[in-house]
Image (cartoon, rainbow, N blue to C red):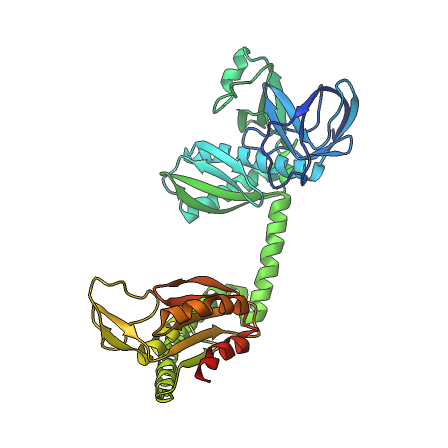
Length: 424
């Protein structure tokens, strides 16, 4: 059943906290009906979505044994309303939940790995098994076993029992909810499994099509097993195929060689990064010496920008432009500005003039970085507001050193002009 007409039993301002999926703004209401096709969250299964007289059900929870529909519209008590189910979401949940029951049953029967808990996620689901480790071979065998059961098209049957029925002793359970009232549902998979469950399930294992066990990970001494089933498995296969085709087009090697090829690329990138670091340090030293040669008795400021520079790049240049000045070891040292070459502990870097270094791509969107140092901390403090406005700097002035991230390099020329005008 995907829709029905029900009577409103109660409606009140919602006591449920808002979530990202809720309608923006406006109040929410808790609506209880005399009947519903909307499944409330429980048993590891998320709630259904749908509508009540066209109003979206943004959440459905069980409270005191009743399904509470959270909607952005109030309804009068006694009103008859049409309740519709989001069938695509429900069927997906049915497939994943039945798949969990099947995996749980086979894991326990063949490997003695009881299920401790499970969760139905947005993209994949997870079962926590009482197993210290699961080998790749065991994972593959388990996958073969569950898919063999699917091919046998075993019936999935729901039976309703009274809570005091002695037959319930034959069904497995991890405990009924404390607010459980009325009858108890038992879900059976052929002669393979019989489990108490309040969730929704497919009527036959054939409706699962297939189950793919993805991977495992350690969790508090146990093992979490991740899986997809049914439509999710088909979509997952489609995604994997699209990704591997794109990777093949990029690296020019077939699927079976992807891991080896990517490993080779990582080694090349690592080697290139080391070479780049050395070359950048050499370039910084050359630039630092070149800037140092431009210093004269009347030089009051220097600026330099390099598109591909880094923080270390700027520090190397500054270390060449600075000289150590003895100062008491207890005096605060500038943070961010490197000590001059040969400076020892207790010696602060001293700069012959105001120096502004910037790095980053002027045409790019990622911005860059800035360091402004000099012999006069008061002058740097005076320039900070103007430079911050021009370059949209996110940083701070600490011990006479201005450094931070630049979010707008489009005004770099104006910022440099502002600093260089001190030479006039």
